[in-house]
Image 1 (cartoon, rainbow, N blue to C red):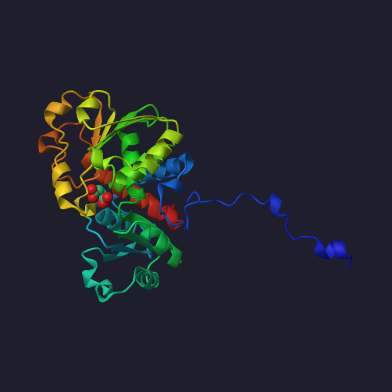
Image 2: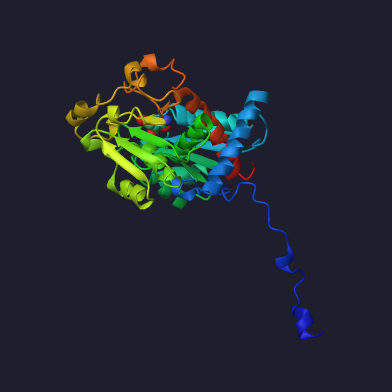
Length: 332
Ligand code: NCD
């Protein structure tokens, strides 16, 4: 046999069709930071989330993730993030190991490290949603794990799945993102939802207004990203300065648990309150959002205002997490 003939490849790989990427590059991936998402991936997740909404509204649940297990490991309190991850998994036919009601009942209280807890849970589960008080902990977990880790909040760091549902909500409520004036109000220093959402928004053509007490201003590192992206940006201490022009008012809680000096918390905790009087000065089609929980930043009397989107935002969280779980597990 001629040498050339022996070496002739069986297939010319260049002629093969492109493989189908069901998860749009997200399959098998950790979700640690919003920096992993470009507009193409965002559009993909948003389109899948819309399908999930239709599915839930039509038939409630499906068996797309039947046989798959999600471990929900939460070292910090949570209502919405943990419940929506669980609901998302169950509506897709999968099941959940919930370690959300206080890790004090798990071996963490015996001194087990995060690495060992992760390496244990991956023996049972296909994906882990992790919330932890330490900045960078989601990446540490991902370094140890052989299955995808989804960051459900790493201290004052990031909260990427919340940012996805926030951006999705803006798009669903107002039909677009480009061209909007978005005001972030409250604890911009420690609020991880603000950090993640702001970084996502640098990919769009938006105007940003940051409203906070002096000591809770947006970290310089993130502000520099906004400036580098060339966005129109301003800071103020008073929500009255932005209320008339904002298309989106994204209000947040002062993150008491991040303060080392509680007297300082007391000084700033009631800095903002959105009232019906303030809402009367806002645009008719403005949208008011909040990642929740609220502890006095939005008066209850605002809840009946059609512009109050925070409970619709909560529901969107389930659709977004359904879309993400399916994508990460390659079943979209
Ligand atoms: C946020 C969080 O945990 O960062 N909550 C949430 O996930 N919806 C916001 C907060 O706790 O203030």
